[in-house]
Image (cartoon, rainbow, N blue to C red; front, side):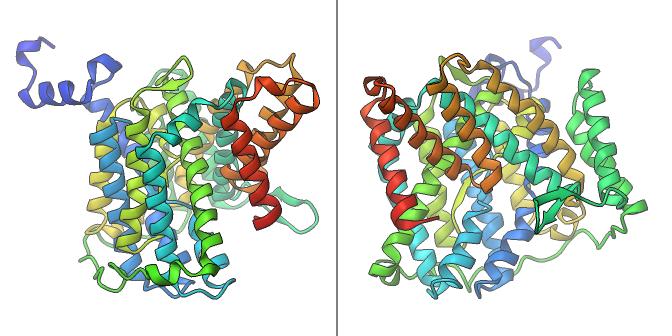
Length: 441
């Protein structure tokens, strides 16, 4: 199209988000935003259910989840210009409800206070650029392992959502019931996505998600329950956090755990998605500190609204695979989360097994990062493999990073190459070791 005929709005978006410089277009970014949103949308229903088990008002948590996701993602898009969606994190919400509130017996208001304090600590280390120093100190082998491990983690999540794998008391995990409609439709969706991607069809992931959603009405018993609904009140959770309770001795350990998990879960996700998007230059992320500030600010904002820790989402890799390269993708995601406040019934139409094929496809592509590891040096490749494997097997990005750092430092020490390890890595390994030995999981 001749530049003179390009709408003025497109020029503004191109300049602000640097679309041309990143080889993308408004249409591609919006499509990528929709793709990522569809893979993340489950959180607006899952998060209220999990936090509801802690005694929190589910309707208010639904609103808080949508708003926290929108605010955090909007900051990431407008301030950091990255195609990364944020929302209350899975795993962190389970720790909040089942370990802190139900397990330790703390009120959910005090637990929210702990989340807020951890978010403020997170902001502090980001403002002081300590977090950036930590990330830049990560060895190349572990940097390669992080996206691969996240890919394997995505694979576990997606296969479970599709019903292709299931729990087993003897073997922990086993093949699911492949006769179920959900599993069959997920397999069909995956094959369609791979075929369309190979044929260079734009929007392959989104087409796959929509195809399975349509099939779910025919074969999966899915029901259309309307489009619009007025959003519930946020009042029961808004500013309900108890900072005094959070500062009690019993919750200081909880604050530390929240802080460590948020630090490395989000860091690993940011690096993994950026690596997949080709936004890493010489192993470094441009505008890294802006992304870190957006991520840490979202945690504090989410706690004020009434939800557990908000963090960068590994599902953002789906939008990246669909072509998302700039913050315009994130802005699209944020707008869709805001719309969910009014069209919750419509957002709930897309079943988990419809987004599972897209996530599994992205997972397959992310695992190939392992080929760039130096396989001839066991002090490099072994910690990398540990990092990648522990993430899915413990269902935690932070656990994979913890054992990866500890094993990296230990192997360098035992082979007389302690000088190859930076001081920052020694400190991180020691902190993780303290967490695992003293604080436990």
